[in-house]
Image (cartoon, rainbow over all chains, first blue to last red; front, side, top):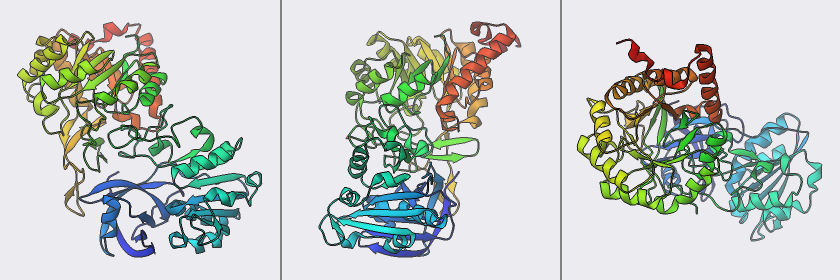
Length: 252
Length: 289
């Protein structure tokens, strides 16, 4: 498909470095699916969907910086929804988000709660200023917050939030956040990797499974079409948590 | 080669893992993404966009440079099929530097990428460049050298003959057709590079004609590439004169890597039904002058 024109209807400042953009079109997406977002004249980047008609963007580079310069009435080109999102399985689920990784999980939590699934969320953030979507997670179920600086909730990483829970209680565990955090959590879930679904981040260029830039060693999984949500047991023994490749294909 | 169905250059060939997966999925040989002298990140996005009948791309030759690519070739070779390194450069000397720097089962010279300044088709549309670069790489390497040609010329056979004179072991045809798509809402060209190359079903009839013309002009084998998405497409390329086929854009179809097996199995069933060997099918269309 060619990029669709998505006109910005609302901009919400979630934190100083995170904004939500709502559009005049809806995406009919499974939570965890993504859009290739064309910031005209700058670049095209993958962004996860945080609302049926919105994305939540953290300012990290040139393209996301350019998105921060946009105003209501401006537009972006969007291809998607693309890829495989989260599969809702079981009666009790645990969501673990780190930073802006909360974005697709909020959509998932709302959808799960609507279906009567019991939802518990752990959000790991640097400090209380980085908290996003508190009401959405609290509306879906229980919310545990961890902060690196101790300014809110439990002091520590997201994994510190696990200490008050028994992972055996959950039918499915959903992760989205920085890769070291997700790799650490998968490492702590010995034997339960198959009930983990992790949304992973790689350098996506085509979004169609043909360019190979996101390919994961050693089996060549293509997260842009086979993911971005991948089961934890498929990530064991892979490059996940160890390295990734940059735009040239070189490891870094 | 028993299995004539290969992975085309530029598709999934960035990593050894992808090359190996293609082989384990049934590719008879695999061609890497093009590798050059220096590391390149490629053009800004969008780098690929779906259009009527295929894909338009301007990746811009992203590659880690040959200095960081041998490991990928070696991993690809674990699959058990030949790994052909696609290489590019702006001069015979650059091509030779890359070829000398890599240990592969063959080289495919990218003289045809339509969207990178100073590389690919910019030099590969001139017969003397094709001949000189082919000869330079041939003289500095002991493995087969294939030359991938651009269709964006008046007479592709002239390029094929130049490659043959330079000592090429095979011709690969075709690379993408120069093309463009424009976003009507913003009036902007969609690709970050503004224009790029068209691949997929839309270009197959063009590729079939190029293969037919080349096979009639040169004595060395021709490998057909351009829009091959099914065993019938592969068959058509072979009947036009191709000794092998490469598959690229179709890897993005729902069956993904499964396409290699579905093409080679379909081809086998066809040959059994016709009670023919693959060699007998090559260029069979020439019986009807």
